[in-house]
Length: 147
Image (cartoon, rainbow, N blue to C red; front, side):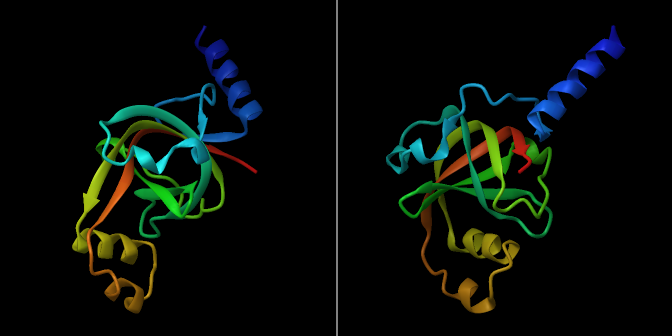
């Protein structure tokens, strides 16, 4: 029985051609990230499953990423309980993310830390002088699709 399950999982992984991080998720019912509206800022937290293109990834260890949602907005994604990370070279790849979406106000020190993790220049880091309210998704699962 165990061998059959392993074989079945292997077939699913091959047919999806994806890497799984965190809890196992499927692509079913994923909403396109461009449909996640920045007007959600300020609303109560909600569970979501979104599919989109990864913009940036923490270059230190892959502990966060951003996903474009259009109109010069993005979702900042962290990973539940700091329990897993994604490859630092996955910018530009398509991913499916499942987790809790909410709004957070990030202070200047946090924004500068994130910019440093993203590999920004000292001038870019120094130019961050105001807090920023943004959409944040705490993902419990990520499916990184191979292109």
